[in-house]
Image 1 (cartoon, helix red, strand yellow):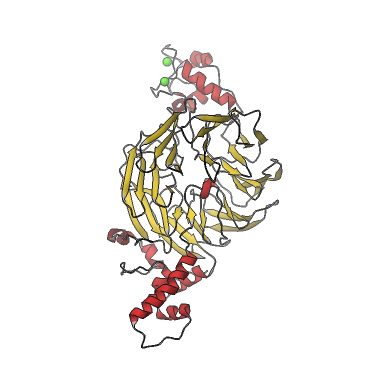
Image 2 (cartoon, helix red, strand yellow):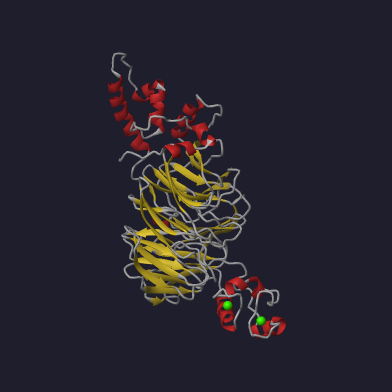
Length: 550
Ligand SMILES: [Ca+2]
Ligand SMILES: [Ca+2]
């Protein structure tokens, strides 16, 4: 492991809240990799406990360091495996699945290993080894932040300056895309800037400014790494495309236009998971799989909503997708001639927003106006009227081995109840889990699509933007209102805990190495219910006014 680069200003920026849990560490030259080690040196009694030997007072301090470092480094690597990975949005392969158990019960002051104040952002934690990567937006800067997974300390921060921030809805944010890493570099995307890539020590490797997407709700997708490529879904209200750049220098390898895709927020899925050859991207009315090699279209499925927010997920040899938009398939757009007769005051055959009669033409004026000249033409209107007419809310399973339009041949099952708006489905141990606004959970058999339970209450109301994640037979999902529900995976709904974190949550949690990482509006929490939290907290409590008890 290379020596971590600690920056003085980064240490200075650690919040007072963070300091409460972490006494300042002044000796950054020592190769002390975990709070366990650091605290042991601060408190020799802990060191003795860990070494389980009787101290000999004549042993020189250097020898102590050697012996302690050997034992404690082993302990550290055992607790914080260097192979620990959650390398993109929803972890390995975008699966949302962790490999280790996580604590069921936690809160702002219980089972907290550490917490760190962060600038605001909706991006989820991306983890590799001892590093956690996140993005944020503060003081006009789009930040990439690297934290030490051992203690939550900020290792480095880098930023890019945005041009115009993309148009966004009330809840959107300029730092929404989750970073992605291959263990050597971390790549980030900001709608208002484009792509940037940093080495693990914070060195900027390259940057690739991109046009600010034309959006109404803000950018939502996250980039994904696939071999030598970094893939970015560029769906927007006009000029959609799928972009593949060389992860080493940011040069464009291929770019596939997605004309006809008029809005989208999904993160692409790579298939097959172990050796990807396809990149699967849902969008307006269709889901399309492209060749990773050249971006050529391989197969597609019709029958989706006008805009896709949730991402596809793989499991059991199938690809699962769920899409829902408000009013989808319910109402047809009025005839354009009727709208002209009602509103076209200057008789130019086009409608300004003021001219448009109340209803969808006025409500969706900006969306329909594809060239953004402020006027709805007959042609622009016809495109969106068709899209709205064909829009269908659906969850389905697809066999991903076809070519061409496989709507009639490779869709294994469909469902129309329990559909999530933003949260991506979870496929776990042969079942597909859906979480709908209002805290309504559904579970389907992954192979047949039969409901095992449908729209049952998690007992935490409100909207859901974070996606469910799972490990060790448990599922974890966070409501926007800040309640993290843990429920048992299985054929029936059994809620194990509702943990209120007292702040809004829009980011998807991560489960790595027995620790659950949850980003709230202002903090990143690391929760653990094992001795790690207890030891860390008790150590800190010795010199801190605020004691955190498990
Ligand atoms: Ca007019
Ligand atoms: Ca226009």
